[in-house]
Image (cartoon, rainbow, N blue to C red; front, top):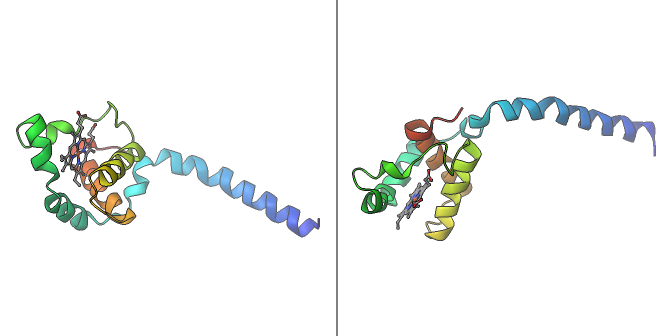
Length: 111
Ligand code: HEC
């Protein structure tokens, strides 16, 4: 192996070491580029609140309980992904992110 290979390898290890803590600190960075308008439209379109209201009463927002099962921005996005799959909404990944970003802004407020 040439030194060229080795130095590139160490450069990429260094890059991971430098960026990983930054990403960990900004949990909600995953929502940084989210399209909130798109998310709001999808939440209406798929009647998320109607179904949650049937189970939880009121406007349905009682379903959103930060710090219980969903306690990080990543877990929130994962939960929306799970509902998407189970309920067959057929959302694209960026749509899942957009929906989760709206829920984060309005209810969970993860940093
Ligand atoms: C057919 C009914 C139904 C629909 C439609 C629905 N949900 Fe849910 N959702 C549920 C149920 C039931 C739960 C679990 C409640 C519990 O924990 O007992 C849930 C839980 C959740 C949770 C987890 C809440 C928490 O903090 O634990 C999220 C997030 C969520 N739904 C998002 C959505 C989004 C976004 C949509 C629309 C795109 C949606 N749901 C549509 C029934 C529904």
